Image (cartoon, rainbow, N blue to C red):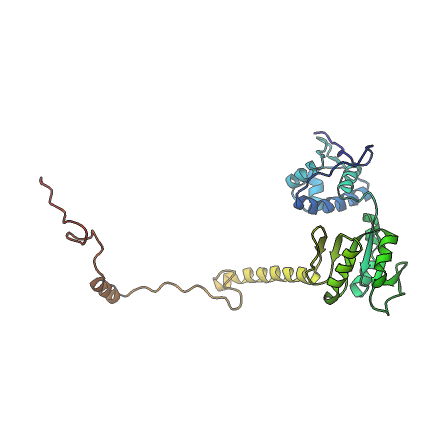
Length: 287
């Protein structure tokens, strides 16, 4: 197997080519591969096998190899993948070769935490502006940035070349903020507010709802508890849940009911000689 640099990846001169048409599932896994590769690079690894990278990213190796083949990267037999080169390839495809400016709107508890997170810078993003509608927040300094009023968004978007907007406001204000971001030309939004945003076609929204993620984990905890209770109850996972019941068993007819139904119901055609619609069967001429 030979390893190839993706056409147009860093180091190749000329115009930037069209990106490969990657499946959405592959795009969703590339950041996991990138995170694992950065960890490997930080610990001094120069190469990694597909099995090793797959384990670090939490996927199976066949899926990883297929994903990376979309990038034109196939590794080297007996050696694996070059960690530095693969980082370059994935960062190129994800558009991380330039640091994208991010505007964070809403600096309450969650927004304050996001504004102070140092991990964005090492992954290709720059928190360029903090904005809030609360006058008591405006002027506050967080991680070296001064919070500005959300009404300044049009000017900030131009000054900082904002590429991505992050919404960390209460749900009631999120749609208005999304409208303002779209109005100033932002076409990528990360929404932490617990609501669904309505945006024009061409605007990409990713939603992060921590409560929903916890509720999903709660379901799995509930299911595990239900399965643990099965040997004692003798039921299914569904019947072990509160309020659930087994479907009723069909009632068996008594001998008297069966005899009565036979007297009341007509014989089925063809069951006896002379039944309606059929001539009686003649005896066979030979014994």
